[in-house]
Length: 161
Image (cartoon, rainbow, N blue to C red):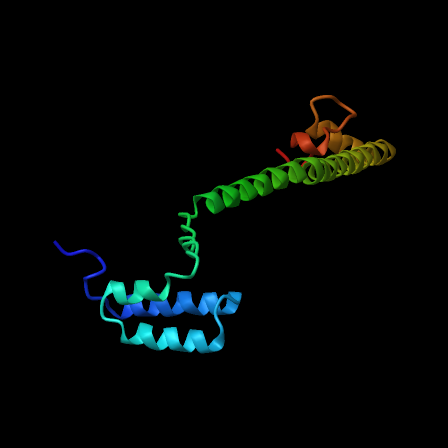
């Protein structure tokens, strides 16, 4: 039966050994001459045993941590949905607290001025009709109550019938 030391190695194993030797060199465990010699032996290695000889007097390096697994992005989507929901609620609150009262105020001003001016015109019309005999006759023709003309919003008046 074959062991892993007797199996042939490929370029990937040689490159990993050279990277490990390079790390030992940068950590100060190897001199430049030792590093170059072991690197040349690693490039000529054919089996796992040839590489194992290069590391017998060196401590074992910690395995590099596997690359962080990428999340599916659900966390970002949840945060994104939360932000959008908060913005929608805030917009609704601002609309209710600021825009709706302004619209109600404008409607109130509109109806108040409308009733104020219509009442003024109606009262002025009644005053003019009573001062002129022709108008008072016309008012009696068009109104159910003699001497008083209907207000304009009831559709009364000479031309309203």
